Length: 71
Image (tube, rainbow, N blue to C red; front, top):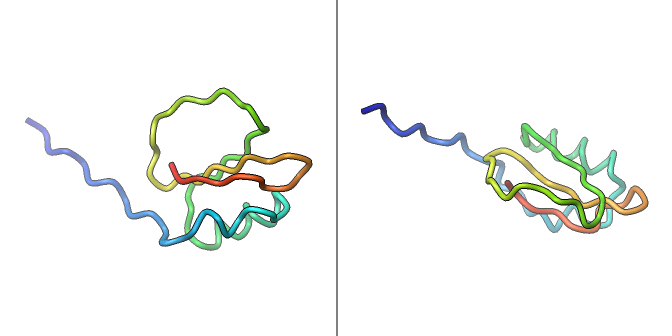
């Protein structure tokens, strides 16, 4: 049986710190802090619930991050 892969470490970062930033600045900051995937979504978007290590999700309304979560 093949070994179970170990997910790569996520940046030690607080998602709440991105709320209130404009979307472009938030994405640049997230990438500087080591997030490999940054996803901006409009409010109420239908998304799948799979967790992806290294991904940071932004809910963006009028170019402002209103919510942020890992995975």
